[in-house]
Image 1 (cartoon, one colour):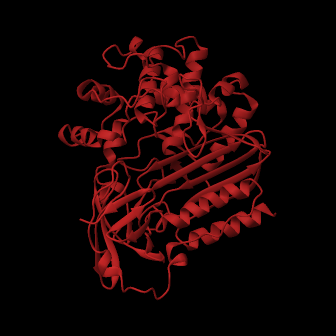
Image 2 (image 1 turned 30 degrees about the vertical axis):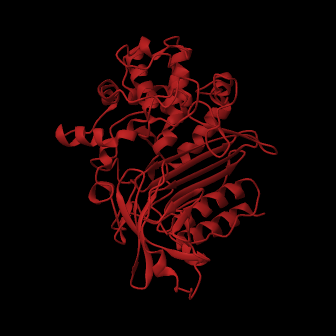
Image 3 (image 1 turned 180 degrees about the vertical axis):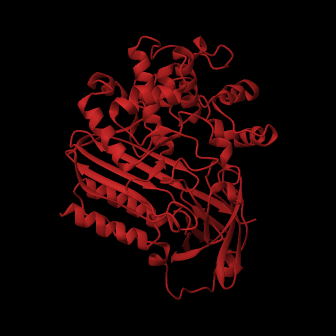
Length: 454
C-alpha cells in the first residue's frame, strides 16, 4: 500500500463529503508519510486551515496533565496513592487517591453531569467558572459517587480539574506556567500552550470549534444549541491545551527518547488501571485507561496508546503505535455535516495507519433507499415512551413535506429535530449521528431498547 497516496485520496473524499475540516499527520519511524490541511478556521471561510494551525486539543489535554503529575511525583511533592482528603479536606469523597483521579476510577461524578450549575455561575456571577469552582460544586451539591473508589471506571473531567488544583497547591506555580516550563519548553513544542478559547483567538492561525446550525457554521456562543458552552471553557487540565500537528509529532519523539518523562514513568502511565478485584478496568471499545491515555495491545503491532477530544464543533484524535513507531494526528474543527462520513473517515485513517485498506467513506445519502415505499410511514407517527439511560430520546415522530421527522431530546436534556432517512425495511438513520431506528407494530427499537407508542 502506498500510504501517502491512500491517505491523501481518502482525505479528499472525506472533505468532499463534509466529513473533515482540519489538519492531519501520519508518521512512521519519526518520518512524516502524509500531512496537510483542508478547510477553514472561521465561520466566514476567510482563514484557511494550514499545517501550522493551532487547535484546541480538548481531552487530548489529559495526557499532559497526567505527565505534569508524574513530574511532581518524581519531585517528591505528592504520591500516587495520596488520599485527596490530604489536599481537600472539605471534599466529601474519602478513599479517593491521585491514582484514582488519573485513571477515572475515583467514582467522583463528572462535573458536567450537572451542567446547569456551571451555566448559573457563568450567568449570575458574570464570569467563566474555573477549577476552584469544581471544588465549590462538590461541596455545595455533594453529588452521589458513581461507585466506591476502585470499584469501577467512569470518565470524569472532575478528576483532572482536581489534579490541577493539587499541582498548583504543592508547587505554588500556575498549571499553565508549570507545563510550559517543565514540558513544552524542554520538549521544543513552540506552538503548544494552555489557553481558554472563549473570548478571542490565540493568534492569527488558531482554529476554534464551530457548530452547524440552520445550514451555517457558528462559534458555539453564537448558536442557539450550544450558547452555554463557554460555561465549561474556564477549567484547566481537562481540555485547555492548544497545539498543532507538528508539535504533537515532536511530543511523540520526546516521549520515545525519554527527554521529559523517563521510560519507567511512561510505563506506569501506559499500564491499564485495575479494579479492587484485580481485574483490568475496561474503558472504551475494549481498551483500558492508564494515566491520560487509553491503552490497547494489538496482537501484531504491540502497545497502542491514544486519546480523543471533543468540544462543541471540535473533534481531535492522537494515537501512538508505540512498539510499531507510528503516529496519527487528526484535528477537526467543524461539526461534520454528516457524522457517518466523519466516523468512517476516522476508522479508515486508523486502518491505513495499521497497513489495512480503509472502508469507503459513507454518508447517510449513500445508503439511503431511493424511492422508498412510504405507505407505512403515517402509522409510525406519534409520541413514544422514553427509554432509561439512553443518550438520545425519540419523543415524537411526524411527517413533514413527505418525509419522516423526529423530535428528540439529547443527553443534555436539550430538544432537537431531525429528518429520518430510510436505510432498510422500516429502518431509518439520521445525518447528525449514527442512530438507527427500526419501527415495529406500535413501537420503535433503538439498539436493545424498545419504546412503545403512547
